[in-house]
Image 1 (cartoon, rainbow, N blue to C red):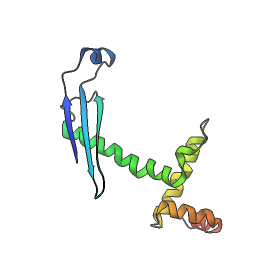
Image 2 (cartoon, helix red, strand yellow):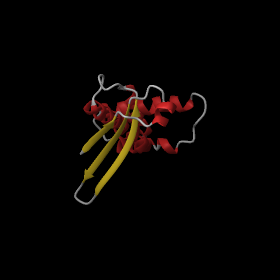
Image 3 (cartoon, rainbow, N blue to C red):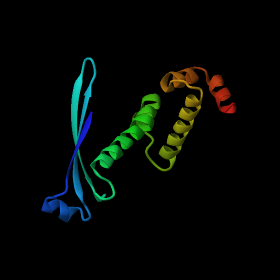
Image 4 (cartoon, rainbow, N blue to C red):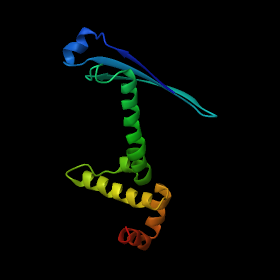
Length: 135
């Protein structure tokens, strides 16, 4: 469950430090499973005016961001240990990200689970090459 509180009256120091700032947002996320209950509170600032995006719209925007995070970045990291990669300079990080995305696309086209499929292709490079050729 998620809830949102939006504040439009801003402290003077925020107005000074962030020109154009219109609102402060507090989002509370609650998650319950059979064994664990968790609560997380995050704060955000935005320059999006209320007449363009109301509180419900801001909450939807926040959810959309996490869908991207969970669908792409978390999957890439869990499948390819992307966060542990030491490549950090030049165009190499971007090139590796594109290669990982391409690999995930091939895996998803075959309706496979990403991590087991990556492990299976790592153990059988010929199958990986066949998957690329038949794509």
